[in-house]
Image 1: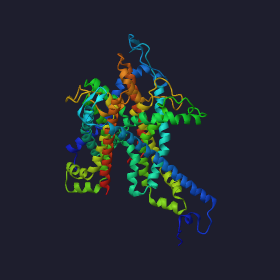
Image 2: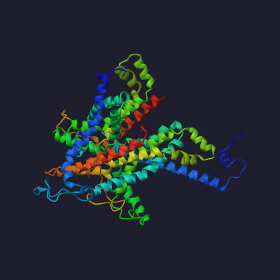
Image 3: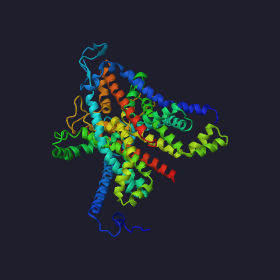
Image 4: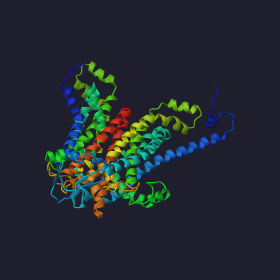
Length: 296
Length: 317
């Protein structure tokens, strides 16, 4: 059997002089690699440029005052907004995670027939509902009809509606990646439904489930549109009211303060952008690292 | 099989939250938008006037609905802005996303591939409002000073590309920002699909004498066709509903259609945020109802587009 020594021979055939069409093909190939490589570099450059902007302007605006003082008009610190973002984020995850994980487990373990298939399809579709539509819904139902006004509860429930289908989906996919043998063995040992899920299945895919929850958390931290008309804005730190008390949050500062003509407002906007972006990226990257470790 | 028990039932109950969410969404938006649907009719979709009416006038009754005198609602300009900005985003994002995906899967060595891919895929976790900030601070000055004048000069013979280039806020800028926001979706998805193509397929093509790039062009990319259709639809759904970034770079046009690709626009999602404050001033509630009607239309469109995307995609994405 003849094995070609080099790429050239493989393409041209041994003993023949490279033809014009051969050189044209090589040239087109090189040009093609340059084109696809450039596309990748363009995207990487955009990400790097965004990070450079946020970090270079953000670092300069960071000082202790940011974490100790509340916003005062368009100056002061970001204590109220940092606290508000933390409350809204953890609140929404606290509502959505148990419901989403429960729904995901149900869809993966017990769902047979058309009704669960519809629920599964809905989880897929709901992930794509624009967040502003959820914000509008939250405004109509909770802020106005229920009379909660701008409040922590309205914001948390709105965001929970946004991330719950996401958590359900990621949990379901995580559960499905576990070998069915494991489930069958557990049932064969006489374990109850509850033990099979809680002691065997969920522990087996806990990292993937947690990854889904973390990504959902990053999503909810970076959201603005659903909060504008559910949480409002406040210059004060939280007084502990779940309804009837508007709240500050970081993404609002970015959106609204950058349009103000004052340097202090811009500094606060960049500081807020720095905090939100860095936290969101850290959460995403750590979630990915966790998932990769699991693969090994 | 064990018999259905409390544990199973309670999990089933959490799963009903999914259909309940959708039903509640549609129901409440419909209830709130009902007076507007009744008053606006089909006029809503084909006219270009968003006029709350005279704020200080006495509300009048038209066809049994109370409105402010002179109130007219038509959102053709929003539909145009939404559809055109999403189309520009996809026209840019699909080729760039496919190229980046195949570059990552075919040219980057396996050991560092996941790391290098982060440069594209982390774009997905940058919050929308930060894209808006970047668009506002970096992209708009750059485009309006350096890119749009050159582009308009060079392409002035093509309709819609000719000057004036306006201020940099507008259709093209929105499309570019949206492109960056949806491209990681396309790249991540296609990278997975490309990884699923067996190595033997590549080897067979190489053995026939194809160069590595010809393998990419003739073998890998044709294999990606099906997932590409699905993920493009998904990206369309994302682009149509994107709010904050578009709000910050679109110029928030009100009541007129874009004249060229540089012209200020507004989209349905961004308009809801920018107009709710002033709509609340309308004592008859018709303005809020009409905004809710926009929200309802957006919801229906996103359900249709995402529904279609999920039919087209394998269930891993």
